[in-house]
Length: 178
Length: 429
Image 1 (tube, each protein chain N blue to C red):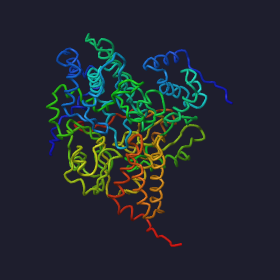
Image 2 (image 1 turned 180 degrees about the vertical axis):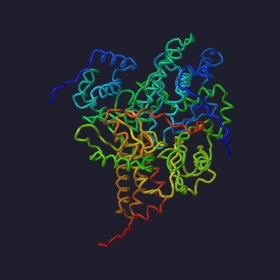
Image 3 (image 1 turned 30 degrees about the vertical axis):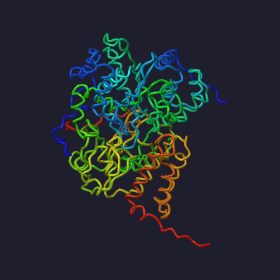
């Protein structure tokens, strides 16, 4: 048995109360609080799930059920940067798998694995809703990187090695905005 | 029908710099319709607003295409208890990426529309469910809603009208099924996103057992426009039975993919060859998926004269869905594309119903077998048989959404599949 070493600060617990107040039932806070926990600890493994359950006074089984239903919750520790390469329909026909395989080769790992230095995890994922800007990827559930090429991937990896996240790319609206 | 698309001025995502800022939105007439309704409640009774939206002919932009105002009218009379809107910004159907432009460029049009809807249905709280992957856009929506609270558009006794409502963002966490309305409600209640058996319908028993209406983000963003120009003028925009401006999300092998706003009923050929600058690298068109991955694909020889509205697409043998159009050129391997679509639905099946949980797996496995060259002719019959076993036999429509592309890709591109299959020889024992 592992010892729970995770805890929320009083400020974070105040945030939890604010989240709970948005809903008529405190059970609804489970998803936002799992997000909060993942942002803080980097994952929501069994111990973090226990913390969330205790914080919200919910059965551990319930929190575990929710955490395992949704793919964006990391049930185990990930690399510092999780590179989710979209390989679904529009990205697929736009070269999504080529981008995924390029990353696998470049980082020397297979899809789903983490580099030995713990820096990068690479995944092939389902549609991320950026179909017109394919192929694309998302970095650790956050920044979208559109119009991927191998050169662009090289640049992104170099900047992430220096812990520099790519800047937000506004949606390229082409209509009447050329 | 022809639409003068070149001179069309976008209404939902107009070309106004910094429109996402509440000051700019208000300077351009924003929140005026909401204020008008609140100020003239004897004229604009909740029923009158609902009727106006119903008469505009606005149909839900999330895929099902149900009349939005009619849906509102299903809400029971207020009994003093809480009532909810769940605004559906889950947007996870492959090929669909339109609502994100509203979050980024015109969030207040959605907020204003949702508030007018809240007034019309006497809603006590609006939950804006946005897929977890859209984190950057969740932050934008949270900021926009906070600004709307500060401006007094949301809260209690709004602008002294006696009307009160709240609005909150709820982030998903990576589950396509949560775009299904009852799954979305389960998710909002803090559970695994298993769709509910209907009836009871959400208007009777929705979030936390209370009356609830689920509307798509784009549908609600249309509401201020309806009140501004009037139901009749709105009904005259675009296609007769599916009116209004539409966000077309076009991806795939075209020169200028992206989200475009035009009236409904744009010709598919115009969208591909003119709006999107034609096929990439001068290739020939092979197939078009008109409205997200679940809508049946059309062969290049099936799109002549077909327009993006429910009537025209039904006649052509497909559906408008989310108007997320995927364009594929002559080099596209349809077996590979269909395998990838089936992989998606298999991954996203929630696992509640056996025909879907097992069927999506069988579809993917069988297609993978054909893709790697081990398929036999009888596998094509097996695929179609599986579709029959799945369609209409599950709690929600995910099984149908998984079956339709298989059924229609296999039948409409049969030669591509046959070319990859060995003939089936039955040995006599």
